[in-house]
Length: 199
Image (cartoon, rainbow, N blue to C red; front, side, top):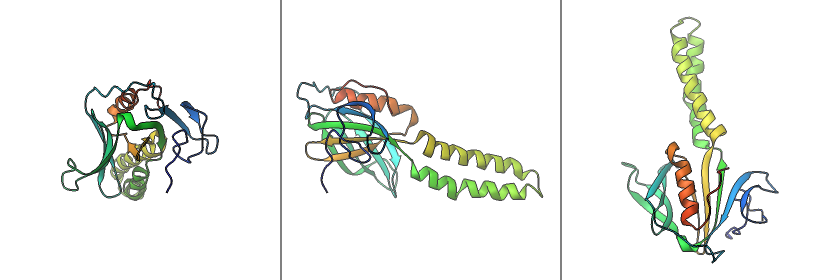
């Protein structure tokens, strides 16, 4: 599989004119594109800053992304306690050619909402016809399903595609929620760019 071009859409790999907040000419998805020191040698890399780690659910294991003084890395966490990295790959700060930040549907949240709280809420709603107290529990499960659907489709998952000289990695950085903007800004700043708004 060929690596995507540094100046391309993170969703469909269509070529784009240059960096900035933009919409893809092919798929119409919004994303922010930043160039790194490998593409623009005039940029000065500044890796100094706090170590930041984010987590996200993977298919079977928790995934993580981390910013440290060496670069940005991502991988899986152990299945027992979910804290120890069991595989890691990363890109050094001076090797980053481009960073593309975009949002994509959080499919895990949507699937969980459809399989667990929504059927329970519907079942309790039917039961509430005979036993009115079940309506309270139906409302709680319906609210939980609504929250998961809003988070999966409305807010969506924040992702960063980092293209380096030797590899391309994709980091999901939406959990914890309060660290999204900080992770985005530090990623761009340490790679030598000027942080802009998240798409």
